[in-house]
Image (cartoon, rainbow, N blue to C red):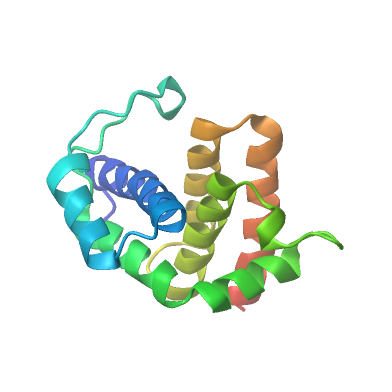
Length: 155
């Protein structure tokens, strides 16, 4: 059963995964080092952003976080191809804001690889993550892209 505590732990893990993957893209941090850094120093630190309901990484579901980070890195080309196929003509993943790209990658990975997570839950969670960084317009963009991805990934 998905308890509120588990739900919050997964929400925290999702936000942490987006930030870890952003760091991975920007700095090229090796996966093992990246995971270790987040385990040691970030999964337990307070998030300063009020938009995410003053959530904390404390209690983030570590195994879930690890699966998302490792899965996105391992399947990045497949994930990016699927995201690209859902973007408007003339748009590529390279044109997307780097944080937005990580949100879409994480959501797409869950839709592809985590059958235990309902489509609506995955989409809703990443819309919430988008709201921590962006305005409603961008959150709606995340909703639209992930909805299209979900229809293909879970057919």
